[in-house]
Length: 141
Ligand SMILES: Nc1ncnc2c1ncn2[C@@H]1O[C@H](COP(=O)(O)OP(=O)(O)OP(=O)(O)O)[C@@H](O)[C@H]1O
Ligand SMILES: [Mg+2]
Image (cartoon, rainbow, N blue to C red):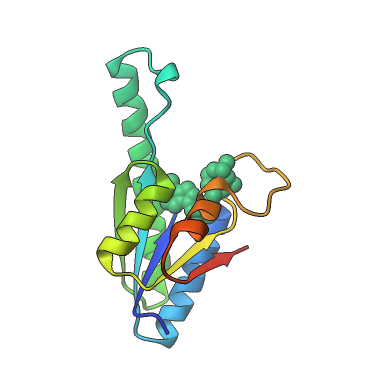
């Protein structure tokens, strides 16, 4: 059983199921769970002014806060205390670096996220993390 589980979350139904899976695993062992929400910078082509960017980032942060609060409550309700963390950067790279720096020994994440629904089994974040992570990765459908 892992001792430190990282759950990258984006507020999608898949990431919620991943969090639930990690909580179940943590209950069966004594592993700790950390939920990580990575905020991406909007593409510069959409940035009309610093104010527009600041407003967009503030709205984004509020959304991320709400997701982390919801997931924290969900875990607490099941008797598992989790740590909720927010970071900024390119999601997959940030997730992989955070895993290595924090000494996590398992990643539990969704197969797809909030992106456009296509036929692809995996999204770009889950497929890059699966490729680059050095620890086991559990993909939740
Ligand atoms: N910004 C993020 N921060 C943390 N975890 C994320 C983030 N984006 C995605 N994830 C994790 O990756 C899983 C798969 O999402 P992914 O983004 O790869 O799929 P998608 O949104 O369907 O596709 P794409 O983003 O390529 O359009 C999510 O369920 C979540 O666990
Ligand atoms: Mg996505």
